[in-house]
Amino acid sequence: MAASSPEQDSKDQTPQAQKDSPQRGLLRGTSVVGGATLLSRVMGLARDVVFARLTGASDAADAFFVAFKIPNFFRRLFAEGAFAQAFVPVLAEYRQNGGLAAVRELNDRVAGALGGTLLLVTLFGVLCAPLVAGIFAFGWWWGGNEPQKFAMATEMLRITFPYLMLISLTGFAGAILNSFDRFAIPALTPVLLNLVLIAAATVAAGWFEPQVMALAWGVLVAGVVQLLFQIPFLMHQGLLPRPKWDWQYPGVRKILRLMAPAIFGVSVTQISLVLDTVLASFLPTGSVTWLYFSDRLVELPLGVFGVAVATVILPNLSRQHAGGDPVKFRHTIDWALRSVTLIALPAAVALFVLAEPLLTVLFQYGNMTPRDMTMAAWSLRAYTFGLLSFMLIKVLAPGYFARQDTATPVKFGLIAIASKMVLSLLFVVPLHMYFQLGHMGLAAATAGQAAINAFLLYRGLRQGGVYAPEPGWRGYLVRLLLANLAMAAVLLSILHYWPAWNEWAWWERAWRMGALVAVGGATYGLILLASGLRPRHFRAAS
Image (cartoon, rainbow, N blue to C red; front, side, top):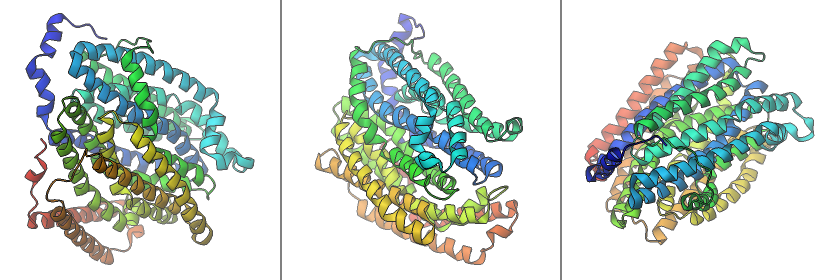
């Protein structure tokens, strides 16, 4: 922990300092996180455009995406998922009861426990890379059907797996900053990943054979850069931990108890996506890549807004629960549900209508073919049916974790995972056998699983008396329905006169897509305004 004087501690704990975080308001915090995340996602799309040019939908591309997805899966499962959802409420409790001194003591112990565990897991992943790769890409390993692809994935996994430790520690640092309503820096940090990977693909690729190995090394370098970026801001806040190995510390033990079930409760979607990867390894070459690019487009609105709202409400809900204020707690959840619905519905409609043109504009260059875009569009359309559910999960799960209830989401998560397995069999087998669209079946099953999980989370909050919808929802949903129908009609009308996306140069594709997005967004906004919806309706929770 960075040293601080008693005067500094006293200053940090003044009443004004304690009041500062709630006064920032949910809308302001969401705007900060959403803006920073939007920049990150735009850079991520630029990164994927570069990837598409470099690798296409090839064996090497499939192998890299598996090697990249494995540490990312564990990162989302532990660092951004179970750990963050367990750590932030406990930190809020320590802050409420013991002030900054207690927070610093907790951070020291958590840093030691987390860092030591991550080191052991990383060593296991590097030494046992063939075993880990065989689990996640079972179809390539089973029977030796894809030996070259499996060998590439294993070799790259040894390079990318340490990213898990680096980015998890980065997530820990970000959770500390978020708990004190310092949202911008953690939200901006992923931009560095995209910048490093773009440099790896455009500058360093020529130094490697095969060139895709440059991307694996880029992932490792990006992990180091992101962690180092966070440290000065922790030091400035006087919150830089000094790791101490103390598994008996009450706060550490409490976080571990909350984490175990939270792994399932908050990360069902991530487990589902990994199941997609496993099943896709049995499908034709390109399936993993098609799913990756379609998932990336769904992640854009989900990451920019869904994750932003969830990031902001968790510390607020945790403080409201610790302070014994159930009215504000319910109001915060209601505000979050209205906010994500406002964005999720038009995003899903637009992605469904514009699926193939959008993919063509972004990715059909270099080694990517029109067929790749058509195949990716099928899975993108299937994913859009789950976009609202994905966002709802993000804002409903904190309603449990802020109250330190991780057992209930576990039950719901297990039900959703079991449902996903059944849905995968129902969708993948016939779609693959009759239409060669097995990857679309995986996306459809993921959307169905998300809907089941979101419904169970919502029903649980209602039945537990934790949440009840506030007045005005029926009229609000009618307004959204009218606005989305008008937007879809306008977009389809324009597409009727612009059918030849494959034939245009990149700049012509770009301005036409920009025009579609602008006209569609304007139509949606104008219909909402004409129906009486105003920005002030979303400031009530500030």
